[in-house]
Image 1: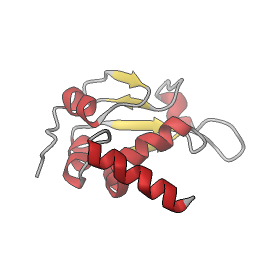
Image 2 (image 1 turned 90 degrees about the vertical axis):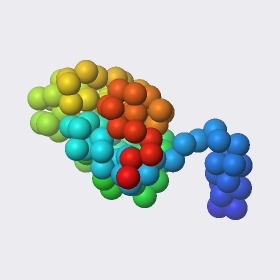
Image 3 (image 1 turned 45 degrees about the vertical axis):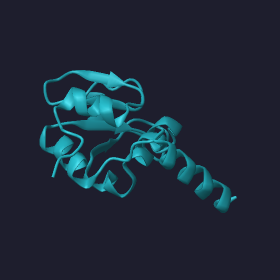
Length: 114
C-alpha cells in the first residue's frame, strides 16, 4: 500500500498535476495575513495540507474541531461554516480546496518567492 501511494505521488509530481508549495510561499501567505481554518477530520483539509508537504508548518492554520465534536471559539468568532476556509488579509474568504496558483493570485504571494 505504501509503495502504491509513493508511486502515485511520483507520477502526479512528474506529470505536473500537483504543485507543491515551498517554504517561502507558505511563509509569504502567513506574512500577508492568510489563514486556513479547518478540522482534523476533514478530508479536504488533509488534501490541502498535502499540497504544502513539509511547508505546512509555516501556514497559519486554525483548528476548528474540538475532541468532543464541537467547534473552537476562534472559528465561531470568525464565523467559519465550512472547511477548509481560507481567509485573506483583505478579509475575503474562499471555502474549499485551493490550488497553489489560486492561493498565489488571491494573496499576492509569488510562486517563486525566495
